[in-house]
Length: 190
Image (cartoon, rainbow, N blue to C red; front, side):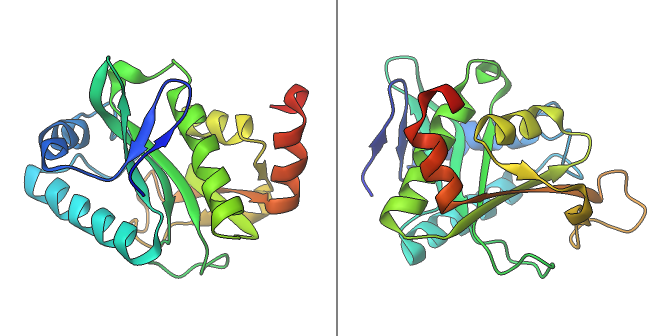
């Protein structure tokens, strides 16, 4: 994929120039509040390599997001195959991580809607999930704006977060292709 446009954004493949702002984003305590710890520059670069490999392997992934004429890199949004075992895996998840300067402007929701369309329309996925810590109301609000549903009975302890850690408990949200079609065709439900 060379670039997917939304009204205000481009979701695209990663560039070497994205690594520095990506490392800054991953080192920001506010951005990483709902993750076990901020990342070092080296950890951020390894993550960027994994993201690029996933994009190459699957034809979708966590795309770099730019706001044309505003900022060349504001974070990532896209689809991913989690690498851990849980009751709902294997699966495809939708996720996002934006720099704080771009929060509260609807960018995550706008880009995520485009990523959902790619997953359901081009890749024929039957379901896309998302998950976050029980304390992350911002991300949960995006999931709800995307018409994803949450069943508290499916909340889980994230296997990659240590026992007893305050962020171990996660909420699982789901969106089926049929529900996505219903919501995407009805502007009043968006």
